[in-house]
Image 1 (cartoon, helix red, strand yellow):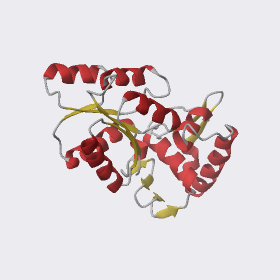
Image 2: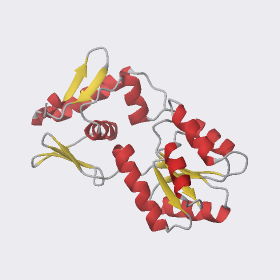
Image 3: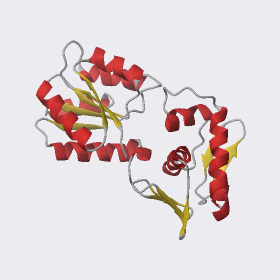
Length: 230
């Protein structure tokens, strides 16, 4: 599934190579050559992944990574360092500074894409095309299909995204505001009660197979998908 990826790299040739390969893979690419540009872009559109060069003009990538991790809005964004600094102490510093992964230059586009996919699978599984199955429901994001046994369940695009988020984060309670950020995006301004409308539509679509029971309302908190294991 396509993701919005912020590339913070001051070497034009490397930035272009990365952007081309990301675009070919279907991702939306945001480009920055320094930290101030990266912060401005991140304020406008919250990226799903940040590819971050360590040595940047003005302020280091490490400093930027630490700031991302310290802020509520950006603390969960996966960060991958791209750097020529290959010493063990540098890798440790990068990981302790908030990076999820660390790739030393030069690297192949194929390795980079594999690392991006791996970190997304760990940190933002709802943005991958991995098949997920819970309680007899089987979702295939690549084909946009949902099955309960042999029966195909039709969902609207918003309900599909919402169910994919729930299925990749089972047993966790999310408030309406959190669901708006995760399913609609943090720069889409709609009423929180909109979530209730789509929850009703989702439950209605799942009712025939009995899977509507998996979507639980947690009074005073929000909604949760129960895996049926507890």
